[in-house]
Length: 87
Length: 342
Image (cartoon, rainbow over all chains, first blue to last red; front, side, top):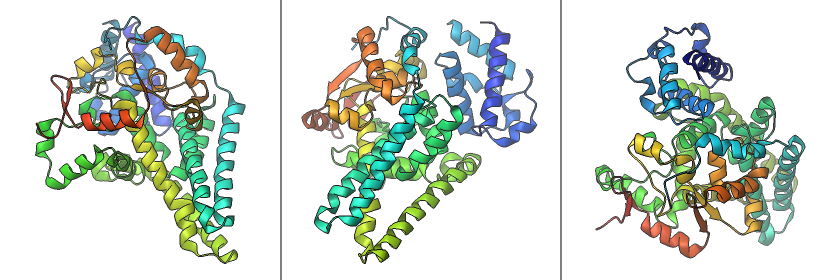
């Protein structure tokens, strides 16, 4: 799967989680772009766990929680996810 | 038990895909039946003579357990084919066990299913290493010892799970933002409980009965019995001398936790039916989208493929006693259970 495809699925997952209340409402006002960094989203630890587990479920792959370490951009997260899928 | 899987997670999910099929009529029927069972139980608590009321209280308890299992499925989005219906039904059937839908989704769907038996994520029934145990204060050590005792096992869920995370979770534990998001569901279960208690009070007045026995037998005892049962069932689903716990995330990933971190405890068929087959647990961890009414068949299919990877245990009180005797502290380096005193 390409990084672009993973990224698109990741963003649509984020929108879904914002919509159903799993992620905080303030994210509705933040535009999710390839260059957006995790810290800019202002997520608490529970929300980060929610994103991580939903990503695992979406990709059917176990992902390490260092996925969000070093404040990656959303594009970099998609890349890391793809690397895990391939490995 | 072997840690080498012949199939990867995707292949196994594909194998179980047919069992994800939803039957909305059956799901709604189960919800209605179990709520009816609850009402019958409550009716009998009110109408039977005092000596027979405990029997009615037992029916209420069974109904709460069954409704909870349906709520668990709905929270996974597995009960019916409609996401909205699952969310509403889930909230409705969770009410008698005073479980908040959102709290359960975070604690169970994400933490427990996402990181089963991984120490860093503080999964339920996390065993402590001797060093971590020594670092506890005397009160915490006492609690830990009680929970790891074959009788004390039943107290864990009420105090460590429901009270801390599932009712009104403290902002200190889950963070301010998350606690705010949990509030509507916390208010919902509280309203339901107040209505339930008020109804019993009104009925006590109308039928010239003392309120306290009705309250105890109609709500308090069944609720406590549910908590004890939940605690016990979750313990035996993931605690077994042969099942490993991990501190190292890579080792945990390599262990295929979706299959190996779970025990298939086999109960007699009639008990399995009463609890909506919730102990067919490997299939559930492999694919949370399988509804309870398909779980037995899915587990059977999984065991045909992976018999050497799955810990299967016929339940007996003797085994349970041995398990609680062995599983006290955990050495995360050698993957061995340890006693409190060497």
